[in-house]
Length: 417
Image 1 (tube, rainbow, N blue to C red):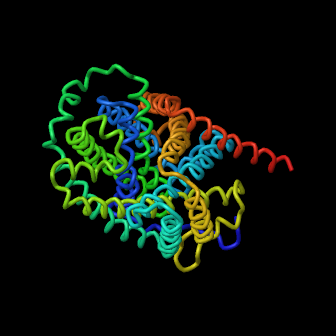
Image 2 (cartoon, rainbow, N blue to C red):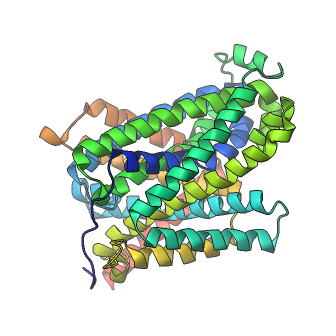
Image 3 (tube, rainbow, N blue to C red):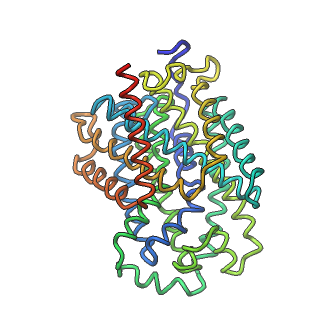
């Protein structure tokens, strides 16, 4: 281990872990992902949402089961190493780090887009500054991360509830699509929408990656993961129905700010700024918890020399992986200057679906007291991940597979040297 490496302190109870899970899922994704999903699925968007929720639930069960057996930082990177071997663990860890780094940069850009509406250098600089500021918050300690996230989640949920209340009555144009919901004439597009919508669900892994900082992890982690996912599914279902009802699938697909457009279509345009503020806060909440989760995976990979060992250093006062946090903040700030929000969604989904496929495979191997649920759920979860990944836009698949392959090749070359 690197000099200065130490165990992280267990400071998160059920409430703190639940808040971090909610902050990771109910983030900027819900404000942007419904438009590309509607473009893929049309009137069967809600079926895609249901498929994404089912796969997310299966993955959550696997993550919860593994986290109770391995309550340490790193998530599926650790589980894959312990249950399947070093290479599987590295593939999961590398996929998580690169996929979520792109996602974090996209969340920073989403925040900047609401603060500085005009695209350009100023907008990107605001995104970079937001990343650096939140990196500082994470260095100060996970309990501060949970407190800030709780404030952001509360305000975000308030803005989403406003959209649901206003949008559900609808303008009438989306109702025929809801009535024909069961008439699936484009299964490929529907499944592709599920893969895209999965982007907005994947935050529950953050609870598992913080396993070394959770009090009574065997009891707390499964409860926090399943509670956070259940709340998120209900909120997303409400948003899905509201957007379809108010805008219809065609207008929803063409929208660059669908939740704001719901307010305008329903005759409440004066309240649209409330939704914009909610989107900005959601972006910050998602970015904050994303960075915390990625840093813990980097910490675990540094401990095993899959990344430079000095990244595993823990701050003596704040008990945080401060080297990992600071380096990560710098990398994300740089990526935010060049990435695109919508393109990042598919790339991130591909990498994270691979991550969860490995989690399900690792959970399948558990026996005895460490097994909490039937193996069939792990098989279904792994197949679901692979199906959603295969139907993502081909550009995302090619890019994701290429980046994962480069990581594996790099590790092979380093080990052979």
